[in-house]
Length: 141
Image (tube, rainbow, N blue to C red; front, side, top):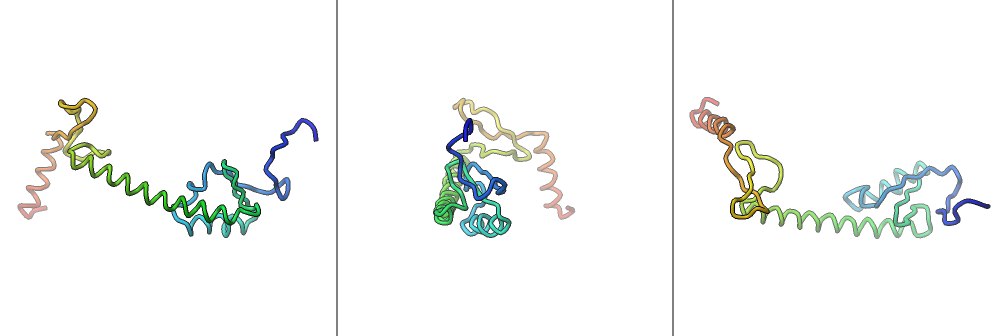
């Protein structure tokens, strides 16, 4: 063979269908879901899964790599969710925006800290919010 790359990933056939992903962590958020996708769903149809780190679901160590990778990914997702939740809680307790918008308020630069924003009542929207509460309180809404 001349002129071609010499570091190709081994294939069972030149026509073996494959799915290439950047990381197995993008497949599923849980261990069982990832393994079912790799070995039951894709495997049943003769599709191999490859990722950019060199994982190949059809290799001798593919099953072990998939189990370990999926376990690590599932643990990471839970840890990341806790860190994000804690960070957003700290921002909320500090009166800072946690993203998104809240009807009746808008965010404006904090006059005491230019790096942060604070909530400010949007008077036009606040009129609507107050009307909703008045109607509910009067029992007519």
